[in-house]
Figure: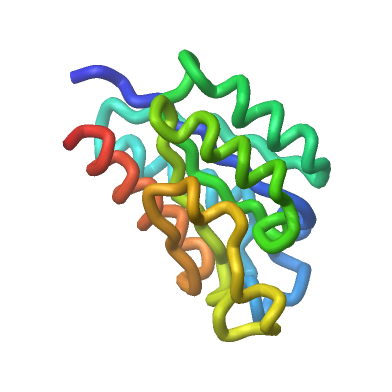
Length: 150
């Protein structure tokens, strides 16, 4: 079985998880989410994860564009860029045939302010998971691996 390489991207302010608005985002940190995802990847077998976080839109766009030929899939939490970044959405669409993506959010964005109800990223993704705090990343990983393995 081919080893699947999954790029896990996290957008602005997600480096503050654990202390930032825990009533919305929970108390897990990116490090604890990465630990849980690595444990899940080991259980699935043949899955390697690479984690990156940036507050800069340009970093995320560059990483997505450079993913072709290096990664089999992307799990992305674009955070606030979900609702504002045409560039990020276009990048996901540009690589979608070669590197499918799953969008993940810690909170249910549809239960929040109206500006958060529309995703500019989701149209380029194979799916979207939200509202399950850190466990949403596990769900995204399992769904993406199942999709990639057919």
